[in-house]
Length: 354
Image 1 (cartoon, rainbow, N blue to C red):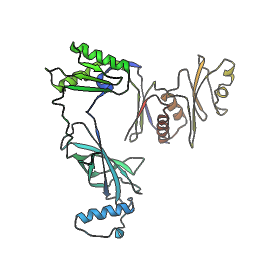
Image 2: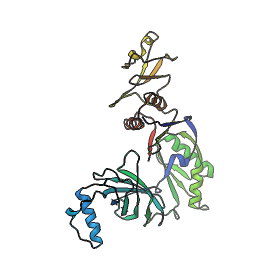
Image 3: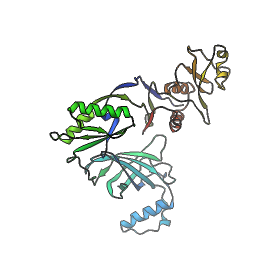
Image 4: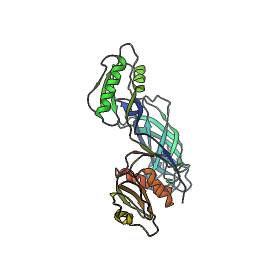
């Protein structure tokens, strides 16, 4: 079993944030790029699909080398999909990180060399060129990264210079926060510059005496007291799970090959505490120890014979402690967190870092 590092951050529910933390500026956004290419130099771990052989034949034809696709038998090549994110205001010569994934039956693309690949936007235009050596993921060798593996060739034609307004879009719709932002901005400048059009959208007029960039910097720095949704960060490469201490989990049951998780909530009387596991509807072994916790509301995280009771609603930290007690593999833990997220049982955003 692999060990894993769990980092818990204590946090309060309401605290100071800036407008930048809870909103985006409409028009300033990332753009997704995609392309498909060939990886060479694999030590017999490539694929033998007809698509790959045809792609290699086309590549060689461009170099005036004619060879039938049927005569290519190499296992040292693979066809891959390449994706990247084009940041706002990216300029020619900027470098981008690439994600590379095999689309054939290759066993591994680790250490392979991605040949020159065009990366296009949804408009079909080429915005970057990719090439470089692939560093595969530790657990999934058919996908990996190339750091600074693409160079921006074409820029998106978007400029803020002549803008007279900016429009904020809140990360989550909230009428109270939208109204608060409107008031804060108007109070700061002493006149009505901001208007909230709905629970997520606030339009703000720029003063004539200020540049648009300085205006944005001032707006984004305004502090707001608001609710912020917690986040769980999972670093697959370093096998680290970072979670807030107060991230709650809703009642749910997940049955997997090696274990079953049940998160229950119930009100038990003193009499029912004679057999709390039974009265909570938990199927646990004779060796399970349960201690009474003051308060009528009883919640439990049960993973087979590991039972954790909590006075409040169960949290991710409770779950991870139970899973650690079971000595579960790190990938089992990560997959479980992802399943809980997909079910909407975790009151937080889950972010995967590779």
